Length: 381
Image (cartoon, rainbow, N blue to C red; front, side):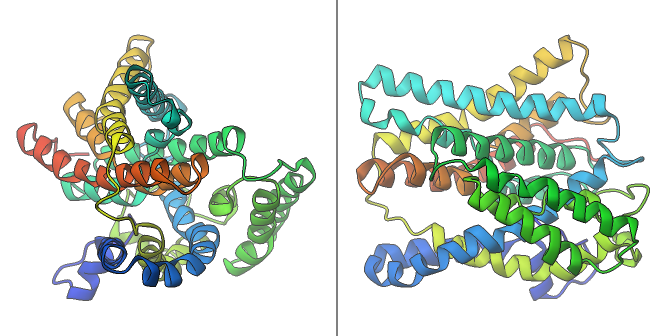
């Protein structure tokens, strides 16, 4: 999903990095290895998961948050709070409809052992969904920041669900009190015009991580509240605008430094979490897939329509056919869907089936491309 700007005559390495193909490679290696030698795969992947999921992915979410935050600045696609409300409402619809479809399928089939997985199809994978959107829509098209904000809101709400309905431990209000301290320290660094991004990462960033981790919430979003407090430009030049490469502000330097390491992190994330076997297909797989592939587009379109009738418009330049493509692209649930599956079920057939459903939601990528061929998106922002 991140975040390099297209350049002419890109090298093969640059093409791989620009299109998040390391993430695809890590996922493919994990699936292949797990199907050939699951014990050998687990011996390597399991020790990696904490370092990748709990620490490395912090920087992935930070880069996503940077693009969304800049889109809310003057000149950005989401500069108006009225316009920003639209993707937030769409995100809620994209969670409610899949959950309802999943619960309905579980209840009508009588497979109540799968009931606890209702949240699995609520998720949108930022990396793959945004990669698909960038492949379909022109640079600067409002569909891309719309999808990014939708996905960030989806995952933020998803982590709240994870904490409330699938607690990994007891919520610690004492630990969560570290968050105001983290925000205050970041604001103090900004007032002092601290130009380097490292003090923000090592000071308030670590405090935020500790607040979430020891507070019983997932720490992958630790830098999301810190990003807006880094010194930044006054206006948004446009998503992935190449002119940002020349901007000297702290937030852009943070992105430029971390863009390539994050691609390596995504490779490790795909490798560490995607190792499931093809034989692990069952009713839970179908329920998750139907919830994602049908529920996401229906929920996003349905709630957006209700918001429009209530006077909340889509961003300028975003047509309903574009929103349909966004809804299909958002059906890729991989990352947080896997988190939900492992939180909802212990090791066993339920976990295996639902994890496979999360992985097979990659089918939304070619489906979105197909829909875009039938309903060609607008090329202008």
